Image (cartoon, rainbow, N blue to C red):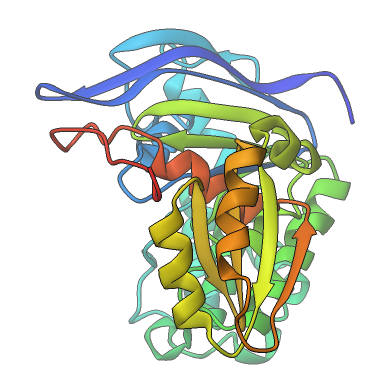
Length: 317
């Protein structure tokens, strides 16, 4: 991966009235990287993305995007960035091809017909090119939105929860396309709530209520958070949960399918907590490595909501 930074911003801040939505946010994204951007709803992810792509002017901070000043050159940044919003925003009464032709003309591109045909082919839309956008399923709308983002061959792709509401196969196909673009040198900043998508990113920045809590290689995040974790299986999961909550001493307690994961930073307190499930039917208890999901639950529950009055206490404390 090249050391060249496509996004290099420091201290980005945005206020809406008295509320600080993004609070002195730093971000450095290398060329060709797939960079995950995670955080609970209302944490400032969309606002940060809009500042990065030139749609929203920061109240404070500085830096560059694609080598251009993030404040003074916002119009030029917008020309070189592809931005896919959370909500489908193309014309539903136009066909797939007509939408892409319209976007291509907005960017004053040459050889519009050829560019559109190539875009349709690359994302498997050729056979549906005459279909009205409003009649497409969520997965096909997603492909069309991505094609519209890429029609002008941007160097930076900003994706704001792009796979929300689509089926697992459509999500896999989408990520195959993102990896193909990354191999061609396109840099991607993607916000997501899906842990199976997060693990595909090279690095992850986690933002909670306007503040960045962690920014590291994806594989390193659980260790950096410092959690210990146990997996508990028993037919009496409800009773196990009750006992663990009564014992306390944990930071994360969550159901994962037919098991409970309990995690915390204080190993001794966590061992005492886990010991309380002893004697349950068909009990299986094993220490495991904490994963991304445990790490992010821990980070999120310990963050201050800047639109609330106080700090939520962690479970078990």
